[in-house]
Amino acid sequence: MIPSLIALTCSAVVCDEIIHLLLLNTICRRRSRVTLIGRPAPIGATDADCCICYGAGVRDLPTSESEGMLFNGDEPAYVPNELYNFCKMSQHVAHRFCIKVWWESGPGDKSCPYCRQPLLMEIVENNDRVNSWNVTVSRWADELWYLWDWRSMIFRGLLTAGCVVSLCGASGLQAFISG
Image 1 (cartoon, rainbow, N blue to C red):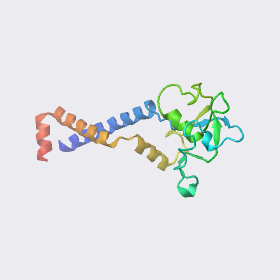
Image 2: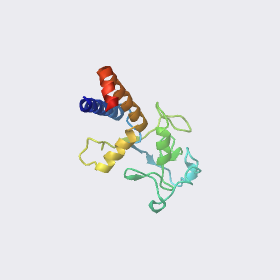
Image 3: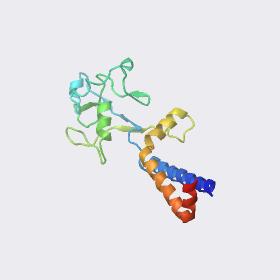
Image 4: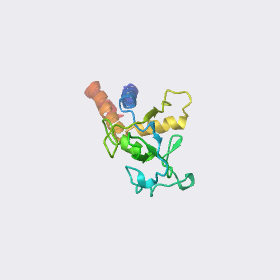
C-alpha cells in the first residue's frame, strides 16, 4: 500500500510541476529575451544626453568584461558612449541598456521618455528557447532555475500529497503514518 501511495504522490507532483512550468513558459514569457535596435545617435552625443539616466545611472556599472560587466546573451548590457535614437526626434537618445530597462518596466505601449511619442525601434526576439537544438544544458538549467518557484513547488507538493492521502481514506493515512 505504501509504495503505491508514494508512487501516486510522486507522479501527481511531477505532473503538477510540468503543467506549472509549461504555463510559466508560454504565458509568462520574459520580456528580457529581446534585443532593441535603434538608429545611431547624432554625432557628438554623450552619456549625459541619455534621456533616461542623464549619464548618472551608468557610473556604477562596470565598463569592461574584466570589471564584471553585465552581459545579456551575446551583447554587453552597457557600453560607454554608445547611444541610440529610439524616437522621431533625433536629439532624444538613450543607451541600449537604459531603453531596455525602460521598455521592460511595465505593460502597455512604450513611448519616448521625453516627448511621449511612440518608440521607433526594431525588436529582435532571441528564439533560442528550450526547444532549440543548439541550447546547452547549462543554459536550459538556468532557464528552469529562473522559472521554477521553489517555495511554491514545495507547498504544492505537500498539498498534492495531502490530497492523495485523503483520497486513499483513513486506512491509507493510518498505513502511511505507521510506515
